Length: 87
Image: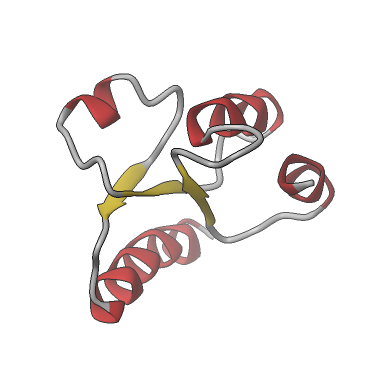
């Protein structure tokens, strides 16, 4: 469903969980990157290891759980501001 939605609408940012039940975040990111190379895709994960970004298959960044709301706001602001400045 999320991949279909990402294909139909242009989102400012996409948040993915790396260990989702039906399709993991890495697979979802690969599918989204097939048709969208621009939107920032941020992983929310309890497994914050440096290799996440090496094996990311298109992830823009990640946020380790548990996180404070301010951390989420900061990362959303960081990537949505870049997009606004480029426009």
